[in-house]
Image (tube, rainbow, N blue to C red; front, side):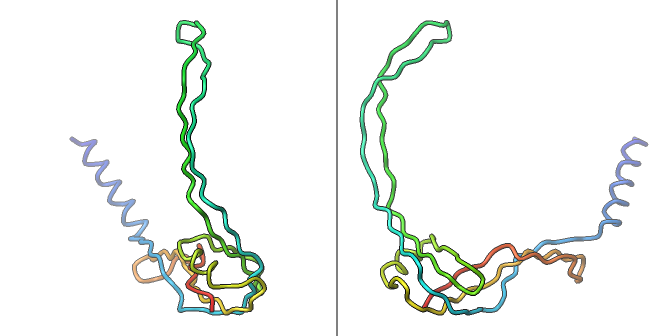
Length: 140
């Protein structure tokens, strides 16, 4: 009983000492910058199946022969590569197909995006704020 009370007291002291930190995902306002379409990538879907022999060993150490049925089902993929003042970036999200259909190679566009931050608060004060990714919105 005494041990449980001491453990609870230590846990309470540790909680008070560390404060109440919470982490939030935060977004910047919409940002824009000029970019150039430098590549439009399309990979067609691939489907198929086949039957083939398998060779192996049993748990007793004997050779075994069998038949394996394989199946391939790879969906089509689209990607658009842009060059901007910060370098190159690629869009492979669900939006990529629509962009791939609409944009042309070497086309000058304005890309819009939001910065995504992981922000840690201690009560109401910011402890740390880290840029974790860019949330691409569109290219016009």
